[in-house]
Length: 198
Image 1: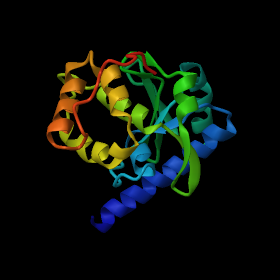
Image 2 (image 1 turned 90 degrees about the vertical axis):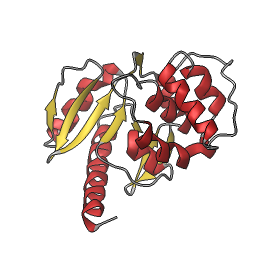
Image 3 (image 1 turned 135 degrees about the vertical axis):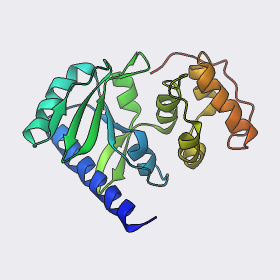
Image 4 (image 1 turned 45 degrees about the vertical axis):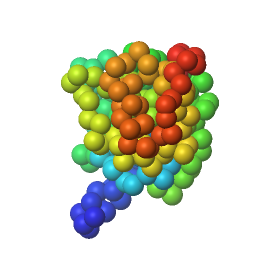
């Protein structure tokens, strides 16, 4: 890893720190997701942006808090997130994951962990993996970038739960088969549990 990627990582973590502090001060309910959450849970840094999940009704407050901090806020055409930029560094505020509303129970399961010298609620590992697998589709099916992240978290994940929730998605379920074949999970997983999420 060159010094440039260290600088990028440091800058993203600084953005994470500023944004999460602002959200906490504004009483927004949120949890860290994406690559920063994986990093907080012990994965190697693969940090391109900061992803927060939050209930849709908290989005206006979150947006305002980031705008007051000097972030540039953008409403993209997608109907499941809004974006904020901190000097070009992207923060995604995600309120829906693959047509599933972000719920209080999802946030209640998040665990306070240290990321960038601040303690933030981080998505529980099983939920984090589910949040990566459910959006997989014909147009977004990058197993390669998921593998190292998932491999790093594998001891923390309830794989049968992941299987139950993702069994209706051929892309997600095929990824689980790949993990079994690679020996990442001690397969086969049992998808017969409760498929509801989050």
